[in-house]
Length: 545
Image 1 (cartoon, one colour):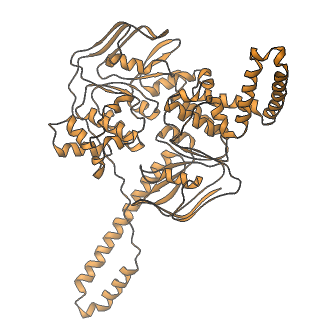
Image 2: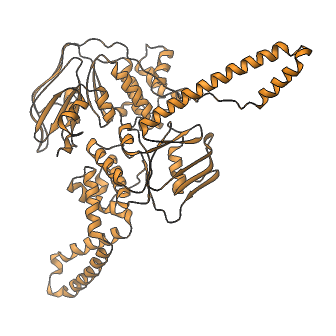
Image 3: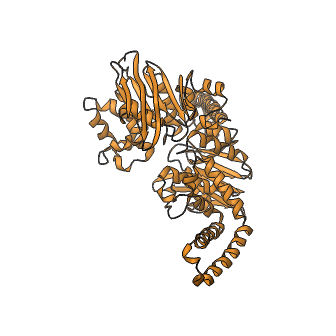
């Protein structure tokens, strides 16, 4: 279906692919993995023809339709979200737009006068023609499917029918994703489709992709999402493409096993080579051993050298001990909070005690971020009290936290500014833990990607650790390696946590309490996310049967 034959590609000074080959077949669901900057997006662009290899060939079978979802969604405005989604399917959206214009004209009272009867007659005639064409293109069914997809991605009816230009960047991403899903092309290329999705939308997308019959090639920083969908992994590493049958968890095991075997093979060969070289060095001057020495020199020349396994740069971050807080960390009593006429909380009572790790769950608009803002003091309650306990030192990671960075400072200067007393060595070590190695520390903050900014803010917050962490979607923009490092570090953290996340691996690893916000009221569960799923029978509140 799609083949890469001996593809080489260089981007500036960086070599991405060296004679790399791979095949993607009909019906396969493939996860594309590799470190940041290894060439995943470039591979997508070569398949779609937006980029060309320097050498080799990228071949797509004749007649194969490709839908490509990237993080760069472009401009959207002037149409409803439904019309924007249907646009990807072809002329049906144009016909649908004309139909709506004609419907509006037919209901215009100015045209319903005897003087303008001819005009109205022409509109009605044209309406009949356009409606017939819309039916031919299966427009009514298509609109229904477009609404179904948008509903799965958590759109309300008002959002579907409203101007797509009024939506935030994250919601426009969902519109672009819905457009690809509605197309149902022969091959789908999805670059980080799990970004910007809440847990309910993520689980809906999971089910949709499981039922998709075409070829799927995708990247994702969400290991749980990847695990549930893909049946094959293609890894980009050091310019080559390596295929593994199985899901992401199997790939990790297999890769670790291959590395172990390769290391053992390398060590055995090194020991053998050392022995041979020692013999040659010892006897090369003796005429009596000349033939043996010559034979062993020839043998060494012919031996194919085993390479040691490529070492992935792994980093670990350890918290400095946080100061101990009192037993009562935060208490909310009879809290009222609303925006305009909409009430979010009415008489909320909630308290957090030392060492508790609460994850907050609820559908979009349930009040998850509002709760975190109330706790941190970023938003005052309309009524009631929010009180922090004794000796509480709070750290708050919000989505807008990245705005505090000074665009003109480099990464290292930002760390120095935050911690003027710290030594250069410890700040460089901190930067390395959060993925800023070598020249990366000299990057100015204004050129950093969303993921890099998130990592830098996290590094600043965790270097001098608070004893109460409040985190709003901390794993957004983070790659798998940084997520794993963060989970490992937070698992050892001695303080208290209150957090919102759509990453099920993160939720399961770190929570020991669940606060569920539902239209029926607020429910508290002892035990973490895994126990919550077992007790309720669903992975997210919005999935209640």
